[in-house]
Image 1 (tube, chains in turn orange, red):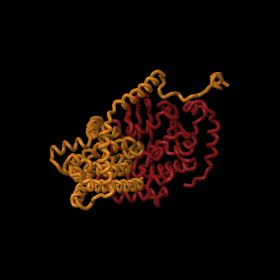
Image 2 (image 1 turned 135 degrees about the vertical axis):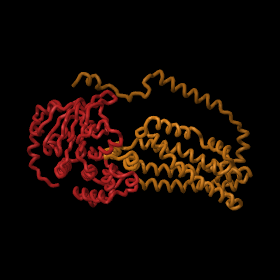
Image 3 (image 1 turned 180 degrees about the vertical axis):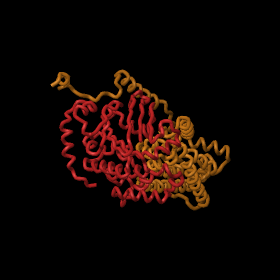
Image 4 (image 1 turned 45 degrees about the vertical axis):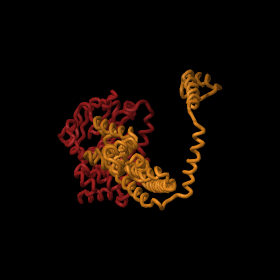
Length: 270
Length: 264
């Protein structure tokens, strides 16, 4: 038995702490507790206002017990069609632009200058919230679904290109190397060595994005970018809570259906 | 046919993987490249087809110096060097046939390859090769449905359909069981004989190497320290390559192995 082992035998063993410096550990813990207490103390809640609001909130919730699908049926149908068109077109255009951007943003494929440009495009797209982009596009192109379509296409690029680029960076190098060793050109290399590896992820992400774009299209209407959101906004303005409830129910059902279908499809591709 | 002159590779990290390697491989000769992990075996064969760019020295294949070639010329030359990989490196989501035909990518244009419209002669050759390795019935299966030995056979077809002059083989049996390992080695050596191909086979199983090749090259810390016939691999030499170990047992098993019957 070695002397190092003899010293260890019989002593207790504890998992080493995540933050080794004891002073720093306690300072962080006490600091965050004090901050939380102060933060909660700073909240100003006007209970009288809440009491008044409760009744309005209740009326809104009660409207769901009798949603009104009929009196604005035409507006709802048009809004839905507009939203669906907006969703599908923006997803397709977004994917088409995302693929080259993703190739450029994958460090193991693209040379440095291209990589930086593509990463910049992605970070711009991700930094700007859809609502802000939509407000900008509404200001430029006017009210209507064109602004919504552009907004969603733009947002799709940031989302899809980033995640696809990460998948490309994680690909199996030897499969790609084997294709390069055959004397394949760059395009052939992408088509045979890279594309098959990332295809399931690309399909999965695209369907997921379709889902997100539909949900977003409902929100973008609130700032004038067309679609079912615009119909929803109008109904709110008119205090037609029955119609509001009807629209929300439709959105929820469509989103759930999309999610179910996308789950099915993603499970089937491996 | 293949000549390496003072081939040196220094990685960006400063690791010297190869130093002044000189090696000549005549037409049709199969060489086993042995050595411990990290000796530079993998780097050496990748420097030949320039999957790794050598730092200095020359690689001359049938009179063409590969080290100075531009991208287009390099691709043309790569067609003449088939490569077989450790862990097979098949594109798993492509079919067996697509994997084999991918060996023709250097010969066909992008659109043809994109639509999988390969010339009939290529398709016939792919079928012929698959039949030769006993996998014709698997042509339309996806590569990831195959067993290890089957995958490596497809890997061999992919390398051979390139119509190469030289095979670069990187640890072909690393993840295979002993019986399959022998079958794969036997297949590679047979194919080389049939087609008068030269081959450099990286392998760390010394016994297996001795069973199948005429010439063994030992690499240690990026230098060639042994070059000779398999019989010359005495314990002293193995110690020089791999370090101190009891090599007698290893060498004795070889004699028994030689009696095993061929079944491929």
